[in-house]
Image (tube, rainbow, N blue to C red; front, side, top):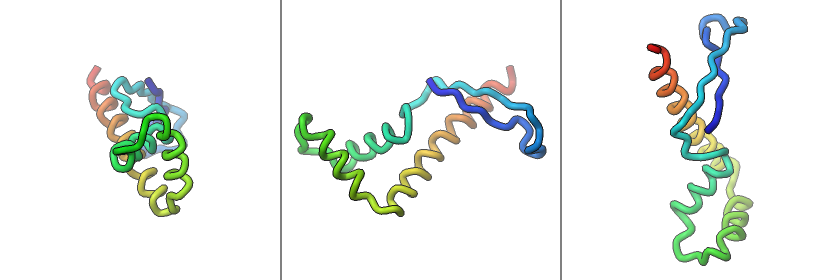
Length: 93
């Protein structure tokens, strides 16, 4: 479970008001976990369990900057959607 701190007053970014949102549907514990999921989904087929950590490290080391940015953007979109859903669910309480 992760806690996100968001500005509650978007129109007034100087406001010190904050909203704490705790997600309970978190899929990934962090960006590295997301990358591990991406690796396993697309590249890990046929790799023995004992070889997965080394294969993941090699795959990660060989990513170019554009690929890392794409993965980071996809991860950020998922986190933003979790925060949005939690906010919409809790704002009526």
